[in-house]
Amino acid sequence: MPSPTTPLNTPTFEIPGAALVRRVPDRFVDCIRSHPADIDLDRARIQHAAYVCALQEVGVAVQVLDTLPDHPDCCFVEDPVVILGRRALLTRSAAPQRRGESAGVREALSEWCTLSTMPAPATLDGGDVLRVGQRLYVGQTQRSNQEGMAWLTRAAAAEGLTVCPVPLRSGLHLKSGVTLVSPSLLIYCPAMLDPQPLASAGIELLATDEPHGGNVLALGETILVSAAAPRTAEALHQRGFRIRMLQVDEFHKGDGALTCMSIRLPRTGAWSA
Image 1 (spheres, rainbow, N blue to C red):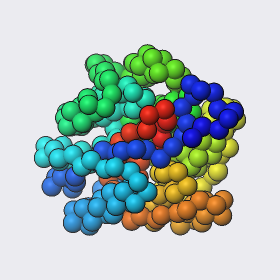
Image 2 (image 1 turned 45 degrees about the vertical axis):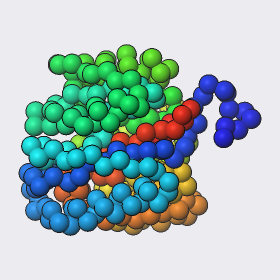
Image 3 (image 1 turned 90 degrees about the vertical axis):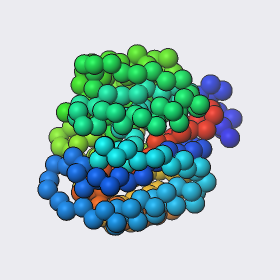
Image 4 (image 1 turned 135 degrees about the horizontal axis):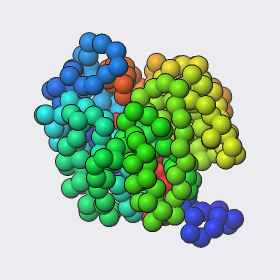
């Protein structure tokens, strides 16, 4: 429920009403990754099931999409789309082997929102887009180019959202190194990005020195944190958040993290992390 001081047309921050996830494909061991690492497929599926349970336990209705056998990265389901409200933009990956991952996502979202599709030569990954209120912060990475940012800017304007670029020092996506904890607090890894574009908007920033600590998933007062970031979990616990730690190391091997494993669908009149 909005507070008495919340403008009537300003969306509130809430736990997502629903989420889409994608089953881990048999070929997940062939996913794109920056460093060679042996992936344990059975362990990845156990970790994915625990992730789904964590979403359900806080009241998120989870829809599980069929896997795409020819797309090893398809369980990183967030990347093919950016949710803007009651509109969504289907993106175009800079990685040729990831094009086609919108299959299933398009069908699931078409009953929920209005869709538009990003054409070539634009490229953008959903993992590069961080929403904070009415702003979309977009990572300037190898996965998201200027044409992609321009397409997102036009689509976002229809929902009253503005786009702000953020340069990265390292990491695959913007949300590899910075994510939302609450509407006024972000957690970030200084080794991955300069926080100035975020700090200049008056957002509080909490630094972590753990490589996987910059990616958490905020579900109201419950924050999902990778088990690979115990100090981050403790710092957020000290601030009063309920922490749910999850083993997702098999997904870290594929340069993935908590946010990229689901598409969160906000409730009417709200926005979500």
